[in-house]
Length: 360
Image (cartoon, rainbow, N blue to C red; front, side, top):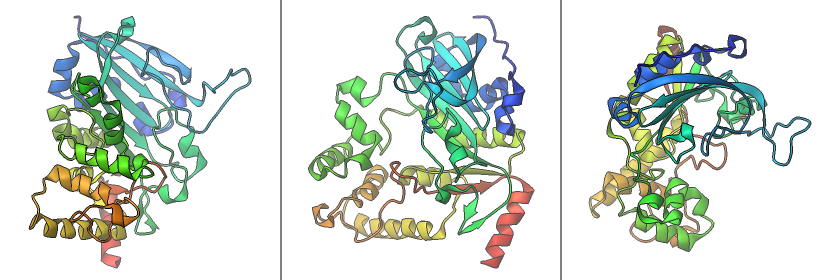
């Protein structure tokens, strides 16, 4: 396939934040790993769409409308978006590489299968960076590229132990799975896949929750992990986040890990919990889990599920010896109570963090 010429970012007047102007070439260079490139195949030429609705070109290519925006003339469920976004589509040897951007976010997608010709495909990769300047206000939910709302005040950016630092910040997001390895696709169990993707939504069905949790306990799938990850994506993601953030001159990276193993993955790369009380809750759990490990064989995967299990109520339903007597995971991906982590990038950011620690 002919080597691609990456398209420029169009309509710059709609892209007021630095991350929105990150080029497709930079996103491809830094975020798309060798294994993802091998799966997608060589990248070819592309085309650009200026989008004002949630509709995509194929199933799975749609965007969101979390603020419920609508215009006169919308029929049925609203398809309009409050602010337009730009999408660039590149055909690859085995699928498609797509970059979407609006005023505050850039998100790249890798699709396996000839989706641009209307054939079935599978999302195997996505990489996102989102400017957090509007978080904690209704403006946060105006982006069509958002998966969860962030308009409540507890989601103010760079809020560290109740003090809001100054500077620019990006939220990270990542997804990668080998094609054909999803639970529903591999064995037809759609309920188990849904549970692993969203375990806290099953807490109102205790018997079903426990049955599915102890199936997942022995599957080799972490909470949230519905298929086999692409091996090198997790290893290279943090360097990619930092490279793009530094190109755009951001001060901080922030992230909200959904489960214990994701927290540990980020903490190993220098991310710190923004709320020391929540960090203490996690340390408390880890100490209790370590005591349990002295009596019960417990893998890292099972430790992550064990933390999910602590949220079951009433606690008498938690089987012995797995009730640890206290801490629950602070983020359920249902409400807006998130576990924020941060990492300073610029010298300005590092000085602020040092000053904050000195005054504590």
